[in-house]
Image (cartoon, rainbow, N blue to C red; front, top):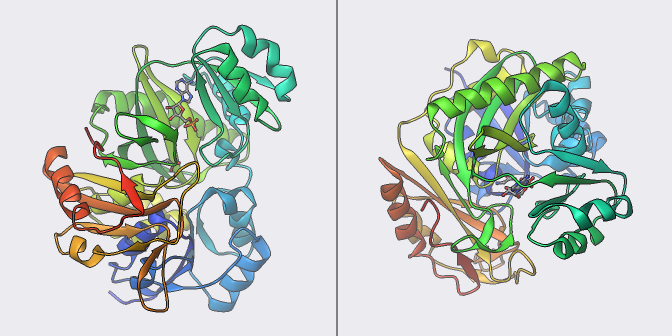
Length: 413
Ligand code: AMP
Ligand code: GLY
């Protein structure tokens, strides 16, 4: 096989490190560039500086370098139309159009689509503003779920146990609002790769969104993940595909805005079957860090086929193992992370066999590793069962010497 592919990955998190790590293992890769990347990604890809949410800047860079495929990590560039601009110049992209990215970018859009396509989800009402939602939230049965309609970086959702708390959350929202019924159950995520025509069920994961042990503390982008999701049986997974994913893709196609990219469904497994909580239109973070450890085929081949609309020609393969990722974050995350602290012991941790993905790091002039963000590292490991994978991940974490960081001890429990 010849190395003939030049690939650009957009993003700078642990998700992008995991994607680059797996892509770099492909014999097809000739050149792998990540913009803007981070200190860990620099070990497996070239880094480039680029304003990744600006369509003209990205297309100019892609034309200048002749990339065959662009993989878009975060939602920002998707919502600002980077994938449309790339497709318009004939470049293969993994990431939906701006129109299809509304599945993540507007909760109201997705809820209305669910109504039209009879997709199981929490009952809801949409309001143009917080003021208009005031009375509804004040008298809604409890708990009441209050959401900002647009992208809010994981901070736009409040599950309120009192109407006062619901109103307080509402007061912080600018723009349209969705108010929902509370769904009882356990959560699981499904990952489905789509090329606009066909879709390929990847696998499931379960993430832990609260900052601290025992699901306490603030809501975060995710403090750890396990794949496959231990609570999602094959029967429930098939039901979710049939009742949620497939009707969604059919509705998007019928509307003239087919979905092409990674569709990540957040599900609540209720007594009444799986219900949709939300869609993301991209790979999950830190789910991807666990997924990439289990992926047992060539990621570059799969994503190129996806970008070129040839997904039907491919098959995805997973190891039978369980994989886990545990996030290490700067103290104070998510409210007020204190960055700039020094991290030691990462090489020793990697020596245990675990895989260390970087999310927010840089190297200083003395080559010391410095934390630059809230979520900083994800330690990933796999094993024959959850307990083995967990033990391996935490054995690696124990080697990391970072006074400025913290992590959850109960991921996968
Ligand atoms: P989202 O950003 O929409 O994924 O919401 C963040 C988290 O809020 C979800 O992972 C759930 O834990 C919780 N959540 C959102 N909507 C509901 C709902 N209708 N019922 C119960 N929990 C919810
Ligand atoms: N793990 C949650 C997310 O990627 O949004």
